[in-house]
Length: 408
Image 1 (cartoon, one colour):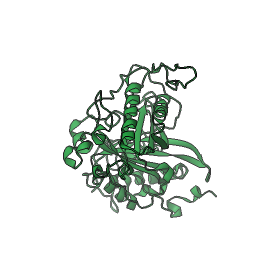
Image 2 (cartoon, helix red, strand yellow):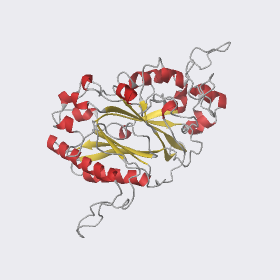
Image 3 (tube, helix red, strand yellow):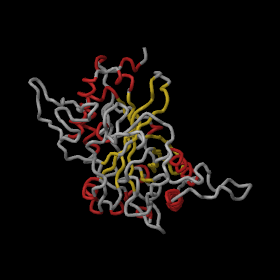
Image 4 (cartoon, helix red, strand yellow):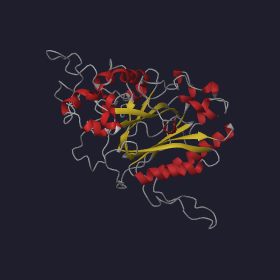
């Protein structure tokens, strides 16, 4: 019998907690076929007060990656960020017409796999990890107080090769090959200055697949994103997402903090659970997305409602614990992943690349996740295997470069 077959409520085995809002902030479909955009979507501007890819409506594909810096100087770090800015500004601007020719005896100036392609709403969002402030570049005094090392959460099964990093980047596009090309060009531009530590890819359903235009579903089949922060509301974004100059790190004004968690879902165990158990675990009805006791998907959670013997929304339901008292909010922007088969168990290696943005992880993500780690009923169906946190730089303007407020 495989280890996965022993998991589950009846086996009495508890596995790690899901990150804040798995059932209220992600979206997914099981389909890795490349979806090519129509070419009519306007490119997402790279330059601006904030980096793109945070409040931008989610695209269909993503690569999340981390780099370790190998240059030993601040000048080298500046050069890296200038190179990356040039790559990002070029690739996001319009059709990929960078010449793939050049000197015959030298490598092409571009890898060429998207030559003539539209950018498909490509965005590239860069951030600094805690290790960038370890003293190598004279930045120790510049580390924001909010850029904390995430504490160990109950049940974490983190793998070092899927976690942390000096610099992080979230690359999103409506075409998987366009997104991969962007990562490939960043790796090429970093040569001699930084090396890729890890890269993970995710997906969401395309508009063509979601014919009912319903809230997208995650790999557990539940609607996911119902209670997310409204990324089109500047008031909510200012309160929840964008760092302020008054938060203690002036160079972060207009930036945000990204928390990344790779969450393995034990799909086979979940699929053997009853519908009633699944709905009680999440706290919502699977088909409609309505909260238990509610009549519409976007009804507020009635946490006081009771049947004769127990709460309508169980005390350990995911949505109850993720909600808390409602004061802790984050902007969720996750993607699902499906990475073949776990050779140890023969089970699907699938789950969620959970990505969220916030103004201060210490009072937003961390308390939510600590609460979930302790009591979430979903814990027996998932495991956290990768983790990272990055301070995402403010945006930049033509003539400048990403990270300039920190490195100047």
